[in-house]
Length: 319
Length: 267
Image 1: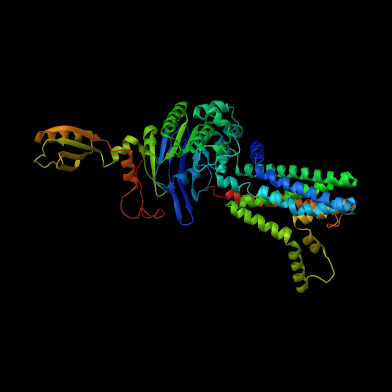
Image 2 (image 1 turned 45 degrees about the horizontal axis):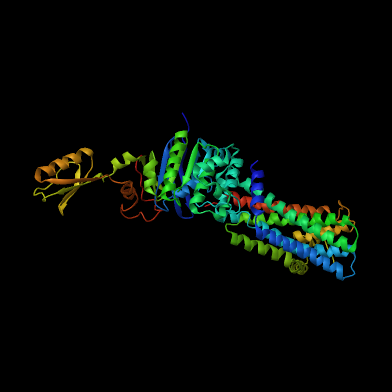
């Protein structure tokens, strides 16, 4: 059996009185693309900082590729590629020189030009000192450095920040290509579209805890939300519609009948029943987006959630 | 292997800093220039001129060394390039050692350049012995590296560059500018407490006198030029003891800085 790409056990980090990460058990399997989601301050960055040995845990353990993140960090860091958050470049060194630095330090044999081609940093730009780079160019360069040595695990912290839509699409393709090569990809983001488009599984952090982790489809199914079905009708139905199984929040008005259907079958039942009592002229179905999913996990579940260190509000959700 | 790459990176990066070269140039030109002026306008002999040049250099070179070294870690921490570097295989120890070696190398180059320029000025104008240049450059070199050690140690222990700058300034003021005053204060206090007989000068008093790196460098240079024995059993007139003290001033601050840096949160 191969080692998990990432495995943390009751990983906890407190800064003074503030618990940034609390008893985190996170397992990312080898070969998957894992999207790590959560609002700012939820503990995503601290988790990644712990994994990279930038900060040391208050308690608990963490390993990647079967190697302890602290004791085996040198061997481990040879086998991972990282775009950390809030990184800086060496202003006076060229882009190419940065990639050469990563190649030297990893003892790799990559061709820097080939890597810079892959991330789309133009030949002119790669000769310029990195101090002149835009955010997008910096991100491309950092990505090229992360790809050095064909890493077994890519850790990308907010990799889309600073990229234009075009760059974001290129990044998505790159993530998929690296995954095809066999690399596990772990990336954090607050841009949900990015996660939705490529992630096999997602984990959602809130208040330093992992509140949900599963395949996207399964998370959707777990949601109360279901699909929002809107039927345009030529006259309002004169019969109550709120006793149907797996159909809820029925609303009538403005020439429409709206309801939330929890299962695929419920959608058909709902449409059939409405058609019995009135004439349906149009149908619109909105699957709950990841955005709503995300919101349902991270906001508005009563009091206590504003205090990240409050230990009396367990948020466990099986995954 | 990592250390060597970090050193090369640091030399390439810091070596492109114009501010750094400007500071070095100012120091070299001013030291050599002032010595040249002294040599041209006074009747002092070669030995005396070299001594004046040395006493001037122990005031100016520490500034260059501290400016060069105090941002070694903190600036990388603040720019975030440290996060990039530590994402790669080098450990914090590799980074710190590499940084120290890189900055010490730059300092040594600047000192050799300045020392050679000064020596050339003196020898050209007054004639005399190029051999004096060996202890001159040697002890200035050791002292420069010691101040780089102090600066890098401060940088490793500081959470921000502002703090590192404050510590570096404090170090310079206390151990270079105010040491006379502090030394006298200590002696006066010791007299009052009856630890020191009037007029006597036990070894520990002499040690306090040569404790700062700049004083140690002067003691070592004077001993070497004054024909002192390298392995003189008397610490103060020996060459080896000041040299050893300068090595300690190099190693201890870097090691102490590492203890802090090893545990620091690179957030």
